[in-house]
Amino acid sequence: NSDKRPCPSFRIWQQESVATFKGNEFFSYNLSTTPIQSSLDEITLSFRTLQRNGLLLHTGKSADYVNLSLRNGAVWLVINLGSGAFEALVEPASGKFNDNVWHDVRVTRNLRQVTILVDGILTTTGYTQEDYTMLGSDDLFYIGGSLNTADLPGSPETMMSYDHRFIRVNAQLQIS
Image (cartoon, rainbow, N blue to C red; front, side):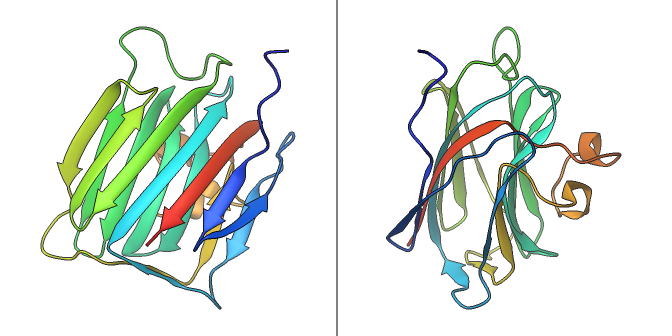
């Protein structure tokens, strides 16, 4: 059955946990006891949805954060290391990513260089602003939604009026 995908695997600091999302459920992890301090990040996830706008992944607050979401059917990435945001919008050549088909996303960051790859072919590379290279977060880490997505830094304006959530997200995160 094409509806079945493996359960999501979250690799956070080499530990694995498994979560499944249904309806408007989401995953959150409190980073207050194990804060992120990294200069090298890799995020891989797969998602499937019919929603045009929604949160895929978020961590951080105010000036240090990563926000990965759908914005009008395109993949939207915002990374801020404290000196201004790097923003990337990845759109398919035809159609949108909210087509109820599985899509694979890979985000890598090495110091200031950020690359986002969608479905193995659509790539955007750029740099965060200024000389800041460390991502620090001791806040909540969200996958697949949040209690109030509109309040998260980096969330697209399209999510400001109400909360959007995904039905299915498989994610893997590795922070070195």
